[in-house]
Amino acid sequence: MKNGMQILQDPFSNKGTAFTMAEREELGLVGLLPTKIQSLGEQVAQAYEQYNTKVSDIEKRLFLSQIFNENRTLFYAVLGAHLTEMMPIVYSPTVGETIEHYSELFVNPQEVSFLDIHHPENIADSLKNAANGRDIDMIVITDGEGILGIGDWGVQGADIVVGKLMVYTAAAGIDPRRVLPVVLDAGTNRESLLENDGYLGNRHERVRGDEYFNFIDQLVDEADQIFPNFYLHFEDFGRSTATKLLTRYQDRLATFNDDIQGTGIVVTAAVLSALKITGEKLTDQTYITYGAGSAGVGIANRVLQEFINAGLTAEEARKHFYLVDRQGLLFDDDENLTPEQRPFARSRDEFDNDTDLTTLEATVKAVHPTILVGTSGQAGHFTEEIVREMAAHAERPIILPLSNPTKLHEAIPEDVINWSEGRALVATGMPFEPVNYDGVAYHIGQANNAVVYPGIGLGVIASKANLLTENMLSASATALGELVDTSKVGSAILPSFEKLSEISTAVATAVAQAAIDDGVAQQQGDAKTLVEKYQWHPVYGED
Image (tube, rainbow, N blue to C red; front, side, top):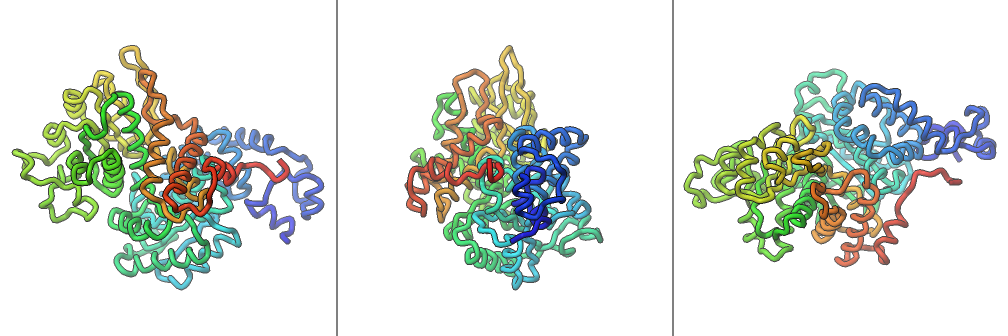
């Protein structure tokens, strides 16, 4: 039985000033709190007033993190009441700044399990110590190598997994007591961290090869023993490891990589919604990805699967796809292609001017794409000439500059709308205000993975699925696309963030139903009921 001070120090049991007098007497809290007893609503209002006194975004995030560390119910009640406003604060883009300063700002480990690659013998104890007796349904893990937009930050990537789980709970109602953020400290290749005496991780270059993969094998084995049937979410791993890890475990347990699969699902939903507006068939489209890293290839693979679902063979579907990276269009005679890129590489025999296809612009002019997706991190590379070239050959070109943060966007929506004379269908990686053109307000869809990954996780956990199947992923994209109202001129091609909880529940229901249909769900019944039964809500015990 915890004493009063221990209760106040436990974020899962602390209610602060909301403890009633009877509770204070029973739990040994008399004299440890101010006299006034507040409701949760009063606490939320007071916290929001304090939040609004903070000047910068990072000050706001640090304030919210303090609440998170002290009172988890209050934190999620505040976040839920102001979700659209606070999402950019608790997650992207503000989380990038706290990651860069994580070592110097470190105060509270926030139930993170830190794993040292040099001590595999400590894996089980590290997981158990961080869980502290809690049952765990979901693990989100990073090694901090490929944090979107800012690169390798080693152990400082802890904030990315904590932030990810904040969104899981705020958007989908994943029980915060049943999740575990994990950081694998395998070193870092960032010179500034290696030279920094204050850096809190291993100060050596990244461990690669067998030692690295054997460590993660042991981690997965031991986690599966401690937390049976857990959902494994890989976050921000590097180009050389992300896809390998996903394929290594996806046929063994429910495994997800948001950078590879999440973005792909959102893009698929955006494409399907756009085609509802144009009335065109998916299998008539020509697709270019600009930026052929793990995210770009993962997106292409997800959209490719929809071509296959529409009736094409994999070989037929790949004829519609072109991947462009730093060297230009990917060709199959390039010895530097990754195993993931190679299936999409084209033969030089297809082109009379293959040696000229060293830029995105040259490739666009050669293949006349109807869909252009940017994951390059190269600001401004969707130029006026490229957009006008697409618009000359496609009545409603689908143009998706997705790189984060905003300063890395391949194009700004206002430019794309103007250059295409209002015909382009646009979604971006960050929020933008509507673009007014020729008397029409064109709403810009935000292709943020937060509209899909919380629902996928909830659907998997609620149905107790032991695998995450292709049908479950396709169901999530379809469900997301169906939430868009395409009947109005200028409608966004992705649903609004303001409906994030509704979106997550709809996606979760579709995923749970697909799990039941695929025979991988260990929990049977009505999918919507399963989802609603699992969802956690930020209320105190007596509410």
